[in-house]
Image 1: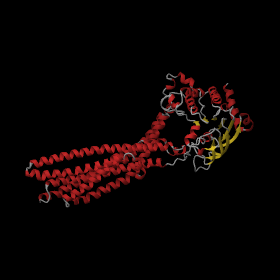
Image 2: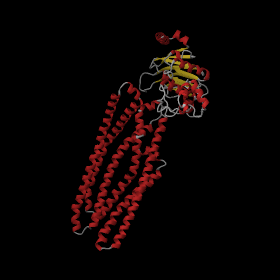
Image 3: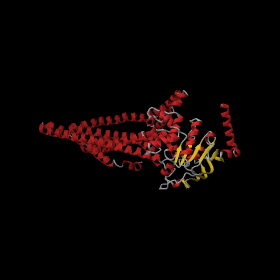
Image 4: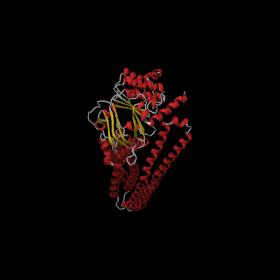
Length: 576
């Protein structure tokens, strides 16, 4: 785990080194202070040597100031190193997630990825911050104090032979039982985050269906699960501390019991016995710190495993690289097979062969679940076909870099997504360098300009989070305008006019014919009227192509197409 995460300390290793040195030096100065105090008690006070006492006292003050400075320095350096390490981990995960295909993302829930980027990274940076101090301080204090205690009285140090094994057994038991609990704790945190995310993102649906009580009960269930696991895990921590303290104070009592006769017989001076007490306390406290470190490391290992899972995930779709650009918008499917689950027996797309000429308008229609969206998502490599070839501009999509391919293929997905910011900010996603004239032309083509003009701030109107300030139809038109701004070779509309009326739908299609004559338009629609005038219409049925041709040809040759058309015409007649 350390080997995998070590590269992300780059840029902060010198801070870690200096922080470790400061922590070690601080511990040494703290250990030397009791020896100076012992000199005052055993030499200065009995002799009444005021000069010696003041001299040693000044030395103690100086050592305390140096120790404090080293402690402050260690805290600053460890904080900087920890925060930097956490930032590097978050950035590495986020950048790697951007390379994921849809299939990779589906392996992790969104809530889990959020937890790994936030909670887990916070735990890792806290481990570095605390570990730099405790992992150095505890061993230095433990070994040095033990050596000094033995140097003062080897006889009294025999008490450690009982105390140390007991403390080590406690530490081993805690690590053994608490490790799986921390893994469960992180999974339970994922569950709570998922419940919160789903509820807040779908709050309008929750309220419209009056399901607040149901959602509250669902959250309460996951929240209680997290609470129970937390209580169980941290219960070990709570029980661990009193037992540790019992062993510590029992050891101190034993030292008093066996140390008093040594002082009376003159084998040991009072000041050295006092110093021995200090060292034995530091030894035992160091072991308690080790216990805390082990618990912290146990939890951080659980977090680290989850982070490494993301970093080790191999993107299913590898960037082809190179400088090859898309020459035209022709699209070809050559005996393409695809399934979402590699282990599934049935193909989601079965033996798809299709040619769409450059500049043509292609309509795709079919029942829900017929794999219409799956088909078009293979074009910009949002998914990868397992068999066969998908070509754009006459070349396999794998020959292009992701940047060049997706710049040439503009997709408006079923789920329209807008981002926080103004209308202009969202439109500039299509082309960051677009002029005002180009933005307005794209909005005119998408029939969005009319409602933008009615807004108080026009293109500078803030949309709120996820575009909550616009209707579904307005959101669709803004997404279409954003796609048009890319000036793509291929424009894919995945049921992206379902929320607009038929008149507006017709205007958008007419604008496509006049303003995007050289762009290949692929339109997935449920309404036949939206694709009747397409150059080629593809009828999908259960992952296969059930028919291709123009509207008139399919009315003659395709029973599926004819049935859909007649049912929709009957609906129109009934409405009339």
